[in-house]
Length: 307
Image 1: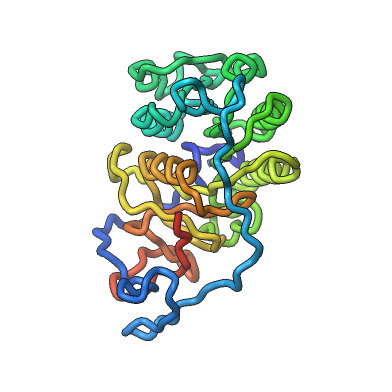
Image 2: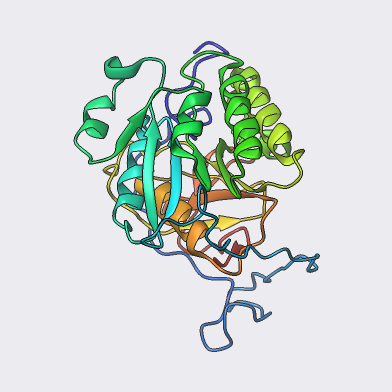
């Protein structure tokens, strides 16, 4: 596979592994003590937690007329590339919460010829071309970027930058960028052969991450997703979770990504301006010294972030 090839949004390189049935893993938290308790599991896996840093909790903005909430109380939300595999799932999930969000979407340059264009067309959602005018028309308070490389190196940052700038100019309050595990400090989470194969694509996504995080006055989140699960159906949610551990790796479904996006936007305690890795706890993999599924007797190798 060429250095510029990427199969789907949020996908790092996919390495062939034997099909396995994964079971629930031991947890690093105690139900009785609560999710923030420190303890040692019965199998000797210590629970670890980073020292708490300064928290910047997102507070939902009040209605502002042209942006923010409309007369019904719903927030204007624009999904970028809603005709991508993850984009369709995100649009569908947010449309289920029409009392909270007034959803519109842009489509990729491929338009109706895209693989998932028919799935998007079946949804009752306003569609715009992917350009600055789309943001000017929708005047979103929230932008969720599902922009994918589409096998073109440099495509993600170039297209995402337009909407980051538009968000600032038009007064949007929140920008969520769906990136990939393998970008930035998560490069070592990739299986060995994938690091070099996906180097150009991950570098492009990391540039997009840095550009977003450099902008003052715009609350943002970066969700790094691992490869999409091709065994489960796209509509299966699984047990998606976020973590600040850049070494988390596994699979996730498009519906799982969408569930996390909605969870982030509806949360009143999640820290903004942060980068999180997303993974389905049913399909966690260990990548070193070789790629293998996490065994049932092993502890989850990262600390989940509650949302």
